[in-house]
Amino acid sequence: MKTELILQSLEAKHPGEHEYLQAVKEVLHSIEDVYNEHPEFEKAAIIERIVEPDRVFTFKVPWVDDNGKVKVNIGYRVQFNNAIGPYKGGTRFHASVTLSSLKFLGFEQTFKNALTTLPMGGGKGGADFSIRGKSATEVMRFCQAYMLELWRHIGADTDVPAGDVGVGAREIGYMYGMYKKLACENTGAFTGKGLDYGGSLIRPEATGFGAIYFAVEMLKEKGLDLKGKTVALSGFGNVAWGAALKASQLGAKIITISGPDGYVYDPDGISGEKIDYLLELRATGEDIVEPYAERYGVKFFSGKRPWQQKADIALPCAIQNELDKNDAQMLIDSGVTCVAEVSNMGCTAEAVDLMVEKGILFAPGKAVNAGGVATSGLEMSQNAMHLRWTAEEVDAKLHQIMNDIHEQCVVYGKQPGGYINYVKGANVAGFMKVAQAMMAQGIV
Ligand code: 2IT
Image 1 (tube, rainbow, N blue to C red):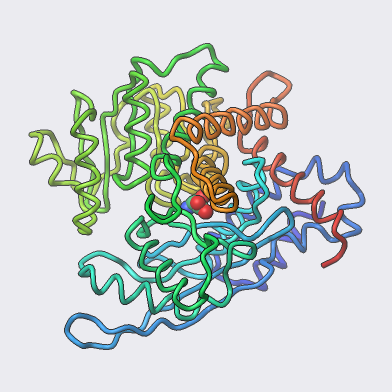
Image 2: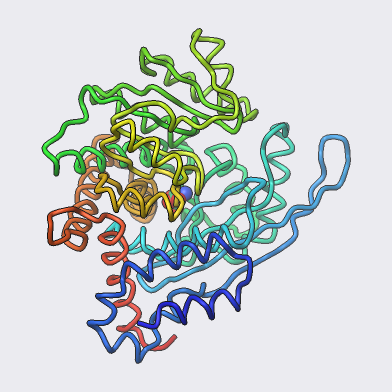
């Protein structure tokens, strides 16, 4: 494969889209060997087609704040690839949102969704809007204004958005309400909906629960158990909450959480009502964790990341590139056993290379956090059947899916010496499924 040439041409076409180019580079390097074994892929220009989104919508989102001032944000939806099912992926409302970040997320989503074994293509959307400091009515007006443009491009069988950073059940409710008013249909064009109007049990917990099920399988491969292990975790939102809940249920000790303001170190472990408190912190909309330290009388490290604490397991649960090479080195020096990316592309490329080189048990977000979108897929199934499964049924399906994803990573990622390269495993397994589906459907 002419990887470097393809990357150079992409860079020339999309200058400055660093996150997107970072995500593409990782996948292309991982799949080089299998790609070369399939000359039919080159003939069909599979790489050139798979790295470009099918289409991108960019639109202005004008709305009025509580003081009557008119604000304008930029909204996006990237419909990346629908070879294996309708476009499916979250919506991110965050000041850092750009076309590049949504293209990287949509690209990753395509392979992640392929790994889930469910029929879902990849997409992602969002806006450079931050919920920080906004009143509930401002958030509602923004969500409605965003939907006023997007509604015509989505639907239960075309493109199904969900939540992501800055978009939880409240925002989904506001967007779905407006969508239904405009589209006049009720088939479930969103996932992550509230339980009273078509949502699925376990969807709020799913990303975190799935990540822990995956980490348990990683440890098992090495003959290890999660019980009794210390876990350094970043973030404090929905994903970190679900991971903390399941890890503590399984006997691990969560010792850190973090926010944009710094991190909290709780040597006694974050469990029970302390985990419930994370939801309260998130609901304040202030995006800070320091109040946890004040409330429970523990130490807060302003402006620092949790990776400087010694822990058996590290779980980045916040945002892309939140763990860099120095952080990885610190974790390795203090004897970390397992690093599982729960955020999308949580580690920089240099951090990943270092961990793989040192033989650390490391797995990428597109495998570890796939439980969220997998359970969105289960929500779509329930909506299509006009049925509702019990929490136990959904949880059992989620658990099975995570075990299957782990198995695919082992099959495609096991190296001659026995080391499991989960980055390679996840990328190859996801790529092969999407590439084969594209081959079967002709040049479209
Ligand atoms: O990154 C992700 O997989 C998500 N934000 C969830 C996407 C979804 O459609 O549930």
